Length: 148
Image 1 (cartoon, helix red, strand yellow):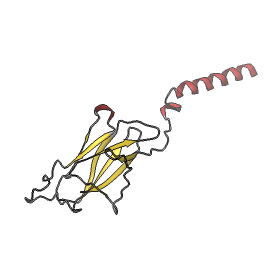
Image 2: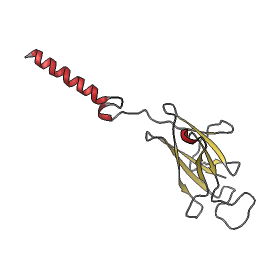
Image 3: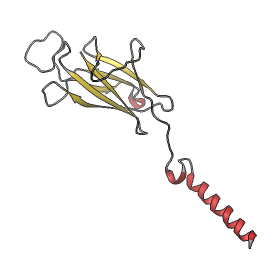
Image 4: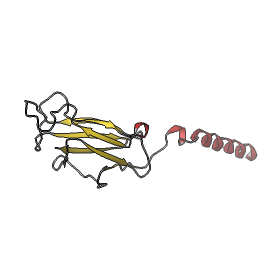
């Protein structure tokens, strides 16, 4: 009887390990906390920003790079907030590096070009603050608050 119980227990343990596969127990692998770091692609400086202290972009378009300790992308970028009294954001993010999506150009797609003074809510001089959310496939995200 004891041999039967040991054999059955060993079978149960083997089945549980098989259920884990490469994705944890029953496909519920836990991932480490994400720490997506946003850097200025030109200078390499880490960009820290908040709603109260947005990143001041010195050019109408700028590029950011994303890195993370345990992941290498790809990332997605979504404009989630803007205060330009317009129904769309002034800026749109575009992936630079194709399928790896670790660099994004933030371009004023919906804004006037620098120097153009026709009526447009997308104006410079800190009057338009926008927020982009960068996300990885593991549910981690980082926010970049910026103005130009």
